[in-house]
Each structure stands twice: as structure tokens, then as C-alpha cells.
Amino acid sequence: MGNSRSSALSREVLQELRASTRYTEEELSRWYEGFQRQCPDGRIRCDEFERIYGNFFPNSEPQGYARHVFRSFDTNDDGTLDFREYIIALHLTSSGKTHLKLEWAFSLFDVDRNGEVSKSEVLEIITAIFKMIPEEERLQLPEDENSPQKRADKLWAYFNKGENDKIAEGEFIDGVMKNDAIMRLIQYEPKK
Image (cartoon, rainbow, N blue to C red; front, side, top):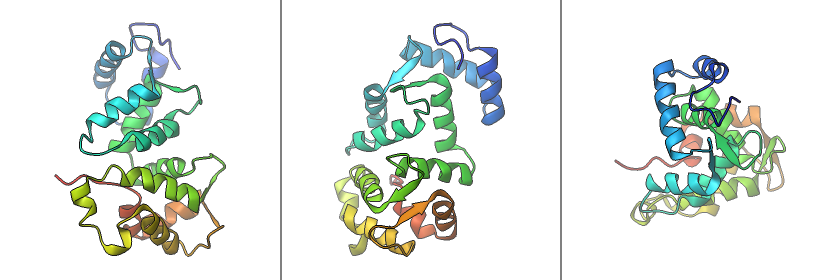
């Protein structure tokens, strides 16, 4: 993972990130310098991530969702994100290919990391997403989507699943790719 105490990004991590993202060496080096200023120990903790994430959603409660996002990118389960994990997260959520974004979305919904998504996991993530939607926008949601439970039920119905059924990753990705309504239900796009 590179030397997190070094003031320079290791060549190995730099090459890996260049190969797996669309970012240039200059961009990665610049972002690394900023990351090191913000996180001198080379790692960001979940509470710090939640605080930063909260800045993007000042009129809502994004902490629960941020916690799930953090979990999905903390690939080594050490309770922190290093620069590599941080850049991969940035790439996937902002500019990655649709299929990769959906792989990430599946990992977000797979709260217990067992390789399947249950309806209770869907409800947990949708509840976190719902808390990010400002009240005035919630009031404008369609009747069948104006609560986390209704959204979870609607999503589950799109997959034609029973209460105790599970969704595997491939089925999740295929379902979302084939149905724009599912994509809309599993994310929140702030109004501009």
C-alpha cells in the first residue's frame, strides 16, 4: 500500500493508481500532497470521513450513509482509508465505468459482506440515503417512494423477490442496468 509516513507517493502505489483510474501522475501527486496535509498519518478515520462527507450535504443527515460508504471502501477492514483506498473511492463514485460503480453499489448494500443482499440490508441503506434527502425534496417524492420502507419494497418488487430472498451481485448489476427506476431508487442525486 505504500509508505504512508513518506512525504512522497510510492512509485508502486502511483503506478497502480494510474493503471486503475483515469488520473494522471500529476493529479495523483497533487491529491496526495493535499491528503497528507489533511491526514498527516496517511489515513482517514470514519469519523473524519463522515465530517467531510457532511460538508457536501449541509441540509440533511448524511452520516449514516457516509459510514456505509466508508465501510465499502475500507477494503482491508482496518477502520481507516489510506490514500489508495481514498483515490479508488473517488474514482469509482465520480468517474468509474457504470459496471464498476454497480459493483461498488452492491458492496455498499451488502452490509454484512456475505456476497448477497437481503431486504433488510436494502432497507438499511435506503434509510441512510433517505436521510440525505432534504425535507422539501422528500415532500415531492411519489407516494410509493416517500418513505424508506416504501422505497425498499418497490426496489425489492423490481427484483421480484420474497421477503426472505437474497440478491446476488450479478443479479443486482443486471437488474439495475436493465431498469433506470432501480438506479434512481438506490441513489440520491441532489437537485441543483
